[in-house]
Image 1 (cartoon, rainbow, N blue to C red):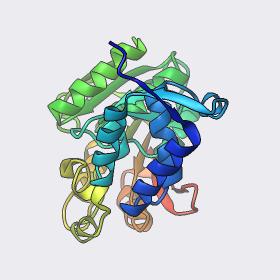
Image 2: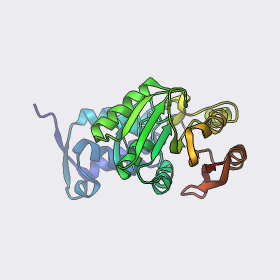
Image 3: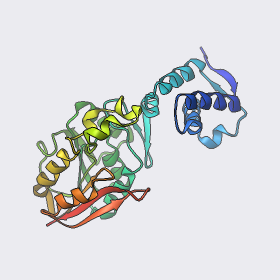
Image 4: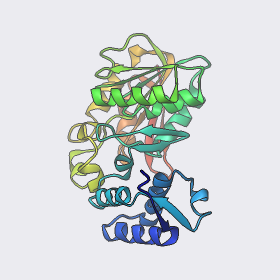
Length: 279
């Protein structure tokens, strides 16, 4: 039975945006468009080609109610876009951020032909799978301490049919063998003080395990800097995502075992990644 109803696209967008704005959603208009694109299966261009759309009103109501309670839209829709990929996401994994795309671009440039990459703390698989899509010549290992994250990352890998990635559970390198040309990681780096002040979408819904790491946010970053060298080939690259105020501290931590340490800025010219070559 078809439970869809025909609505004015213009009125539907306006009403949805108004509800989201009232709930304090900053990009209400953009999110209203994303919701309608999801419900209709249309691209943005296709959506605006039509004056009327057919959707299931109860599905729209459920999505708007959940989003107005400040549940992240990606969790509500069950998907997030990262580089050229659509990834399944759920409350057990961190939602991929656009800034992490810069890390993937750097890895794709730096990894040698037919090289080996280890993605530590893979979450939804964003770094490993986007790199595998761009660089099918690479052999990629992706690990996470969370069984939920490994399950979601493996589901994404299977759906995307990326055979050059293997995913398994590991606490950093505890279950990892061999050496890699590149080790990449987006580990928790939020401080406890920052966590309290996060937007409710992040603080109340995304996994704290994937966000915080000690009072200064650097406990796991210290560990990976200490443990990575034996798992890197000579002149292997370690690249880490960091908080915007942590560049100098992380660069100093890397100074002992790494050379040519570099702080990399994001789209807003804030410190976002630190990279170094194994000495």
